[in-house]
Structure formats: C-alpha cells, structure tokens
Image 1 (tube, rainbow, N blue to C red):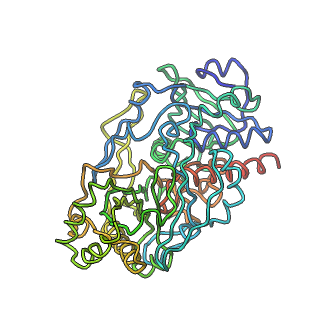
Image 2 (cartoon, one colour):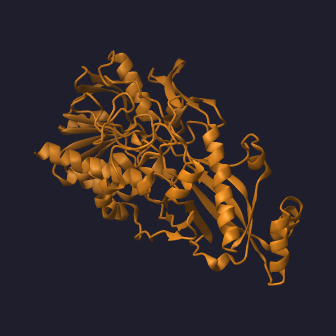
Image 3 (cartoon, helix red, strand yellow):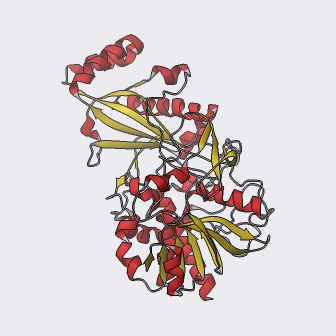
Length: 479
C-alpha cells in the first residue's frame, strides 16, 4: 500500500509492528524482508513520489572544512531516496575492509565479511547483478578487480508495484519524522510533520531510521537532545567518524597494450592493492580506475614523461618502435580514516521549515588520506613497471603535496559513518546487529553504520547489511 500522506494512512487503520524511516535502498530492503515474513511494517518517506524543490530544501546544510558538494544536492528526498541518482557501480567490501588496520586507529568492525556473505545472492537479485568475478593478482601488491555497473536500480520504481500491492507494507509519502521519543531504554513514538504542519505521533514496537548517512545522525542528535539522552543513551560517538571516498585524477599512464586487461562495457579497468601492500606502506584501501585516452593525448603525455621521468621516457621510446599508441588517465578513489573530528552536528542558527535544526558537516581529509593517494599510485606504478605493462606519471599536485584540486570530482557522494557499528558504546552507536546501544527497540539501517569505508561504492554492502538486519528483525519478532 502506498499513501500520499499520513491522513490517508490513518484512515486505512493499518497497525504496524515496525516503523522504518526512509525509503532508500536500506529502508525498502528491510521492509520487503519484514513484509515477506508477514510482519506489518510502515515506511515513512519525508518526500513525495517525485523530486521537488520544496522537499530538497529540507536537506540544506553547511559544510565546514574541505570543499564538498551542496548538501541538498548530494542526496535526494523522495521515494527511493538517493538510489534515484545512483550510477549503479557495485562491489562488496573486501574481507580485509572489515578487519582492523593496526596502523589506523579506530578501524575494524565487530562483524566480518562472512556475516553478510549469506545474503549476497539476494542482493544480486535486488540490484540486478551478475555474479562477481574473483580478483586477479597482477603482482603481490596490485590486483585487477571487478566493479559491476548494474542497471542503476531506482528502488522506488523497481519495487513500486510490489509495495503498492502489499498487504503487510504501508509506504506513507510526504511524512517527515521530525523526532523519535525515547525514555532511555526504548522508543515510545515518532513525531511527524505532514502537509506543512504537525501531524501528531505514530507508535510501533520497533523503529528503524534509514534516512541516509547524514540524516540518520541529524534525526538521532535532535531526538536525543529533545529527550535529554533518552534516544541514544551512549552518545559519545553519535554523529562522529563520518567518512567519504575522496576521488581525484591522480596521474596518467602509457601502456604497452590496453587490451592486456579485461575492461568493462565502458572500456574502463579497475585495480586495488593487496592487504599485505597496504600494511607494508601503512596506507588505506584505494581503487585505481584506468580510462583510455584518445591517441592525440599520448603525444603530449610522452613529452611530459621525457621532462619529468627520463627512465619512463626511455621505455616509451623503445615501445614506440612497436607502434605504442595507448595511454590512460588514472582516477583514484580511496578509503578515508574514521576520525572522530569528522562529524555531523546540529546548527545553532539555521532550521528547516518544520523547525528542526539543519545540519553542519565538519569534514577534512588528513595526512593519511594524501599518503594513501601518493603511495597507492607509487605501488601501482611500480607494479606496471616491474611487469613491463606500462609507465605511470603521478600528477605534480600529488607529488608536491599541494592542495586538492577544486575542479575535479572531490568525492563519491558516499556518506558513511555517524552511527557506526562497534561493540564498545564509547566508539560506536549500534551493536553488531545494528541495534542502538542501551535501547530495546531502536535499530539503524544504511551506510551510517559503516565502521570503515573500504574503497568501493557502498550500495552493495548497504543492501547486504539491510538484508541481514531485516532477517534479524524478522526472526526476533516472529519468535
């Protein structure tokens, strides 16, 4: 069932056991799991069925620190959430992404890759994916890896008819959860805003915010403030350890043969480091994306190499006799360290139209992020040279430690952390089952529970974690 507003929902007399806040990939996935188990669930979506400027305005906020996207542009507030601008790139976080890195404080999850593996077949069906191929070692340090570009599933579109026909799932549009009310042990209700006015409260046995990697923190911070600590009793980590994936063009490469590697449908190739290489260089995970350059760009790159890397230019000169004609741009996306100072907090001066404080995102990249970029490109270049696959030229700004360019990608629109998973309530907001520490009936879905970010796009892992949480709740409620 899909209702246009909370009034229509109440008139239907539907009584939910679970209240999910948000209809993005996590929210819809959890709702479908619960609905298939015969559990009545309501999904409250603040936006409507389509994009609107009025709805997006609720997402305005301020970023303090490094340049970043406008906060009302980097996510979407309508049915399907930010899946509506998802590019469809898929890869599951590696097993070593869940493990602690001793050289990076506060890394590691209380669960491992094996805890989400049982749900990956289901995830493939949800995201319309073929099976992932195993990584292919290029050297001890660098692996060819597969990123699959799925059809970019829009959750609101793909599952619209299923949700509309379901007798166990009620999706309520244009209904904004402004506050969760708690007594320090459980949530007792959720306050609503609908049709531009206070819309009372809704009650359920369980509550699951799935509003994204920024709004989950905002909702819980505000609710906790209003309830004097009654929503997140252990709030030391709430809003903190926020992460993104920095993404920049880091250099170029001249290749012996671009067809040496399997490319995707866009003629792109992806590589990432081995765990041993990361440990040896004391860096984090990263991904290098090769994008073939037109032939005209090769000549300029050769000239640049002759000036800045004579050894590489000598190799190029030798290969020119073999009709060398291919080069590539190197785009790098990499893991950001979980740092408590990267955090979300409530504005003390700005409020949205419902009177809720807008958010402030405090975000800066550290020296470790730059070292990961530089040493990652060096690792990549060393492998290509040793295997005689090509020669890499690292961009001057990377080598010199200059400021990051402001005219490039900046980041991946990947919002992670803020309600991170950790067994220690001082280091995390939710436990290994995504339940808020100290609360009997409050769970959190989505990438805000990520303890570390790995280097890959998060949607596949988000969906796997949502399947796992939906399964956990289903068994808990039915039992």
